[in-house]
Amino acid sequence: VINTVGAGFLKEAEILRIMKSVPEEVELILTGRGATRKMVNLADYASDIREVKHPFKKKIVARKGIEF
Image (cartoon, rainbow, N blue to C red; front, side, top):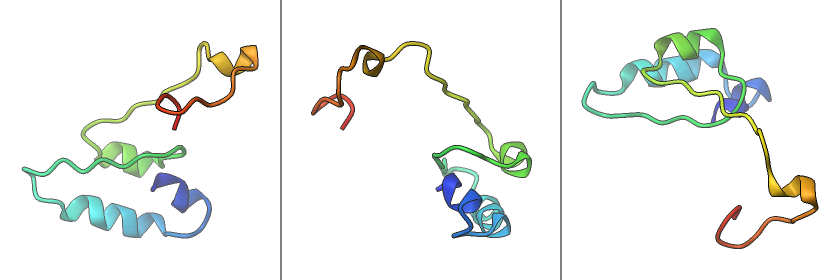
């Protein structure tokens, strides 16, 4: 979802409006790269996951049940 803002499909203001409208007892999970500072500030959780080691570097392609 977050990538759609950077790609120009959705406006940041629309995502922020949705984030603000979610009831407190509901946990909204948005995925993707490139969250804006405003999105991060509004979120309860924010993660930046980066690759440290991956089988792809050993030429192991995506495996059913693991990567997809």
